[in-house]
Length: 398
Ligand SMILES: Cc1cc2nc3c(=O)[nH]c(=O)nc-3n(C[C@H](O)[C@H](O)[C@H](O)COP(=O)(O)OP(=O)(O)OC[C@H]3O[C@@H](n4cnc5c(N)ncnc54)[C@H](O)[C@@H]3O)c2cc1C
Image (cartoon, rainbow, N blue to C red):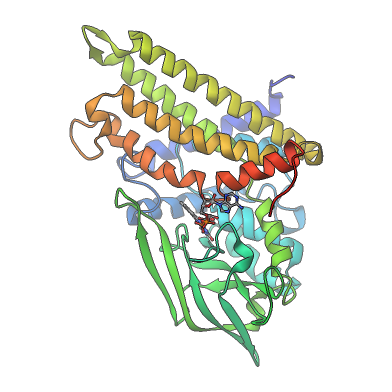
């Protein structure tokens, strides 16, 4: 296997790296990406929106889109290089829900009028989207959702609750999955809607993490009136469209690049910090743990590249569990990294907000926010079931 990049790919990677390095040095608010400062705060989100527009000027947010919608159908490896560069520099600016999940679904299934209306603001980095799937009693078993959208003349009336809505407090729009046939069961009778979150009857309520950071939300719909033009594709076909949207939520390449940068920062810190008369970096137990993390990141990167190659070659069917494998490995590695990292930093490694907190308290903050990574985007138990079924060929359970 040859991991070498071509000259064009090297040049593109440099362009991405220079762009993100510049903005993280010149445009980011102070302390962005460390401790509790992230895109979920007001100031952090302002920076995220600024970066969305800067990236849109370069058309990097839509590089994978078909040419007729302004994209350039960029090869998967170029998308991977972009995701790696962005994550390595800890930069925000990609609306994963809008540009990477909803837009490809629109391109496949929406009417011409909807494509003309919905795609341009996403391409220009003007709108932030959120994902309205999970409900208090429908997560892994999403098809049991009960939020209703009932057709009355030229509009739908929506009632129900969505939960765990990532970034819902800052989002302008949501792609919503709701039941348009109240008599239907499971995947039948569901439809997808493009919802403006400022409509009357919509209430958003924060769900705070254990460290008080505000990332996810409850969103309530109380007799919300939505014009029929906002229903995507055919009524009752929402499950089919949603399964297709799920397939756009796959790559974990950025996670490994982001962790690589964090390990480098940790190594730097440990070289300069002494314990028992010598730098921590010279302690055998620390060196072993770092070597293990470094190895895991390389394994994960190889897995992500394998997925990219399979997608590019149209051969995903030969390794149908690969995306699940990478999801499990990357999310558990995120947790392992923060846990092991906190241990290496000693007592103050557990402290978030203190002048003595090493690396601005980013390690415990990273640990607490990484807890959700093994649950979101399909829990790791569900992913392991998929690996057992389609990867190992074991019998399928429902
Ligand atoms: C940080 C975070 C962000 C999220 N963001 C969004 C978002 O933006 N939009 C959105 O719609 N949703 C979002 N979610 C919701 C997420 O998709 C669900 O939490 C997830 O699908 C699990 O559903 P649940 O929470 O209802 O748990 P449940 O489905 O009730 O599962 C409970 C436990 O049982 C296990 N389990 C369930 N079924 C099986 C099975 N068949 N076999 C083995 N084990 C099983 C699960 O793995 C889990 O451990 C987010 C969640 C988190 C934590």
